[in-house]
Image (cartoon, rainbow, N blue to C red; front, top):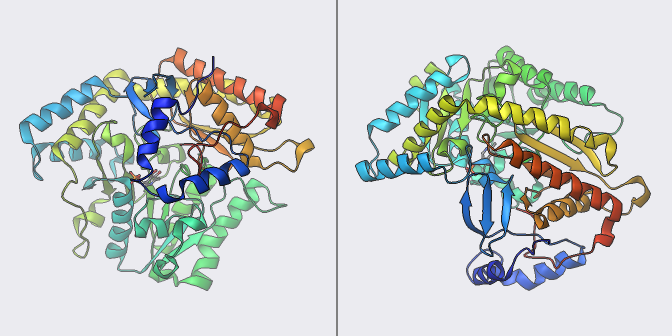
Length: 468
Ligand SMILES: Cc1ncc(COP(=O)(O)O)c(C=O)c1O
């Protein structure tokens, strides 16, 4: 039996949002536009409860959770030990800014930073704030105006991080006047690389652009503070860079006296099977941005780690906000790191990643609609394409159709941009559940490949980008 998304209870709750939330006044219009484009059900999941590897929606449908609170529940949903640690911190401290846990967590983080080279930490609440703080930290330290960022990147939703992100032009609408010192360079991995270039040539071109085009044509070499890069382009579609790209960036930063900022908000703390994604590349950044997993999936906590002198002697820099480094947030981070160590969570994630490789890699040759399968640890991405015989269909239809089919069969994944499905299973997901989720995904791919659009369009709901 397939699941109806949204079910009656979820639909009733979503309807309550129409007078309350963004774009409510456009609701019918968007539904109509979505159906006209042939959208399959957007499938907004209204979570009723969550536990371990699963969530249940308010209609009591059960899903294997590959969505993971946008990659924010590293050891599964509602982990009882983290909830208990957070509860105890609430009981003991309530809310105050200065408390011992913020020191304790900063000490722990200093120990696990790449090469132990980033011993100083500045707390923030969200990944957005932390990425923004990292950029400002670099500018103040270098006393320079420009920052280099990448196309298809995502660093957050504040004005500064929207400007720094390259994810899509609509995202920065009306902010053209705020671009200021941000220079957006091409990122060599995406669905769209220039015709007649192979991946290696394009990567070399992108490095050339950083080291030659920008300083010769856009901003002077000695007025560039830093390059901010995601060592795994997460929101942009789970793309995994080659070693040559990140090592090339490190070398260019060293040569030009620029800082390298790694935004590890999504890739950090084990998502790629190592504590930090940069460790796959033997690269140590000067500044590293942390968020998401640091919350342990329970209580917001984020921040910026930096080399000793960058944060230790930077009088122009100031950031942070009232709720940065709360007792509860730090307690969540501390308990999560304790469990990582106790249960060897990264080893388990690496094992699951190996299973994913064995199961998913063959999809590229087995299914015409699968363009590429990518993974780094449990950062899993699949790009879809229209089969040769049906060139009039759009590639994005296939990713959304597969994601929708998965949902109907009890697996929740993300498909919110371009032609990709992204998945972020918990790092400690049970092997059986993980295999079951991938099996359902493969069946969904096979069905959409076989039946194409004749699978039929479910009513579009609730529209828009379709598919959180
Ligand atoms: C690489 C990266 N940086 C920053 C952010 C923003 O984090 P937050 O949504 O917690 O503000 C995200 C969110 O997805 C991200 O993936």
